[in-house]
Each structure stands twice: as C-alpha cells, then as structure tokens.
Image (cartoon, rainbow, N blue to C red; front, side):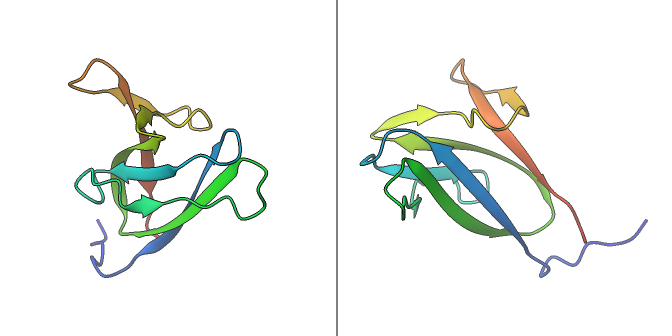
Length: 95
C-alpha cells in the first residue's frame, strides 16, 4: 500500500446555493469546526463558493448560513452526528 504524503494537498471546491446577501461559512473536521472559512457570492446570484486545500482523507463538514447550520444539499454523502442532524462528508483522494 502506498503511503500518503501528508504535505500533499488537493484543491476542493465547495458550492452552496441560496438567496443573495447571506453570510455563508463552511466548517468541519478540517478546521476543528470553526466557521472561519467564508464563502463568497462574487456574482450576486446566490451561489456561494470557496476553495479548500486539504490532504487526502475523509472530512465531515457543514455550512453556517446566517447563524444556522446546514448540510450540503449538493452532496449525497453524509453521516449522522451527535446533535441528531447530518454532516456532509467529502473524501479527498490521493492523485
């Protein structure tokens, strides 16, 4: 089995769709669930985007939209969490 170089990071693009003018952040196991990665709606059309650089592995995440936690409706992969809701899951593969 090939070892994963922990310094190899991959770009992961996330997208969240809602009304324009929202405050949208993403938090997850990749940043200790701190909603400090803001997503931007550069076109003002309600499509919020961000890019994360993550090492290969599996990560759980959610969006924080105007103070309310939401799972990723565009991602069919999720797991239940300890709060009775769902966390979205993303798997970053090695090259």
